[in-house]
Image (cartoon, rainbow, N blue to C red; front, side, top):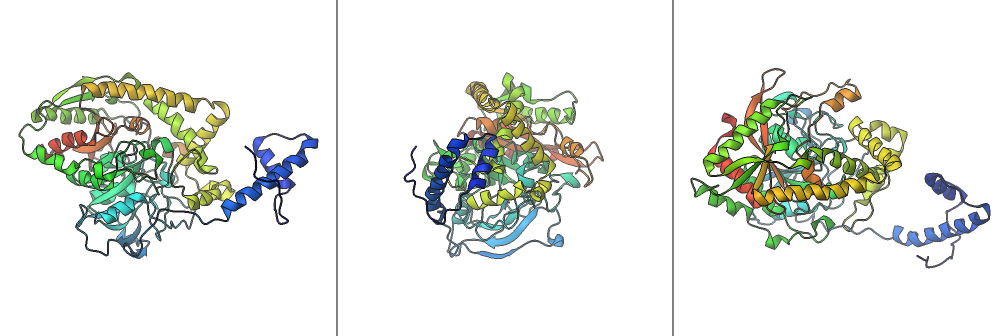
Length: 534
């Protein structure tokens, strides 16, 4: 791995202090007689990388003339009743457009890049991050005819499953002020459920699309990993980054997925993903459901034994499991076979996920990710340097601090566990695949309990963290295995705290790249029953 040259320019800034900083980071020293040589090599390396440093960056092209951003502004309190809007603006095609999203309004989670629109990431630990290019999902939404009305609040660094960690304040559940929407795509859930927009595009690394979908009473799909390009979206852990549609109906969900899916030849998560021209026509599949009184004749649904929590434990509410079982039984009325199936490793999946996400998130906070082929958001990587300061660290929320501390702990004391967890995830994937060879889909509760009230501002760290304990028990596994999973509303239950009725979500999981079968099951149920009556 030789350097091209040992020539050192007169303006080379590298000196002994730089070498000392590098050695301090490594925790090592050099032999005195070798120090001068290594300083020369470091100077020569600086000469080499300066060539790259001085070149202009290359970004996916953005057509701001065809898709201008108009009236970009931070919403006033009176225009942001649920605290769900991060930014408001209008972006749409200036050319005549009869695409499949024509007439649809949409909002983007505020970790998705839109050129000329500030990106908050739910935090004030970094500021003034204004992307200069659009994410692939933005370009595809606009090209398909959608009107983007703004960006939705996301939880602080997308590291919370409840909805009170964003620097802009809590996001309220449309069904009950003061209650969580779920996170981290909290604003997306609230704005879709309240009718402020038709659709949203959220992000999901542990359940962050499906959690707010469940608690807000909407449909949220985490597609097969790589089906929708993640290009231009702030990532958390590369192996589990997902983006997907959040809507009030299954049909709208299928339409939005059709508009977004297919490789963009940039995101390396999309290896094996067909191009947009070869993506199934998901909406047309639903027409078959309407034409049959028994649309699920011959369909096999497996109730995941380990996904039902029938005993009170922590925040687990057995009423939720009972409600989901009752909803699953209704699939029989539509012609399906419904029976229990076991995937033993499902119960261990949250611990495998924790090893991967907590160790995997550390590079994002300390110098950026390597080993990727795709678009790097270099402006954001530079901004993240603010977290190395005492002031920046102080603004990092407790949930993110906990994840970073856990990740560094693993790095220092158990460096092999990330790899071991990854190896075991292959076994987990095989167990799900074995079950899905016998059943068309697997069904379970999305979250084992109802929406919780917000933590008070003066809550302790443990009080804040405790609000989300066990929240991702059924969702996080499918982020690491990549299986598609949809949360759909199937009924209401009274909150234990004050008798307010709140939504309950049922999760449907399918084979890789078989979103069509998930939609068939969900649409059949939606077409046959009104979830608000149950």
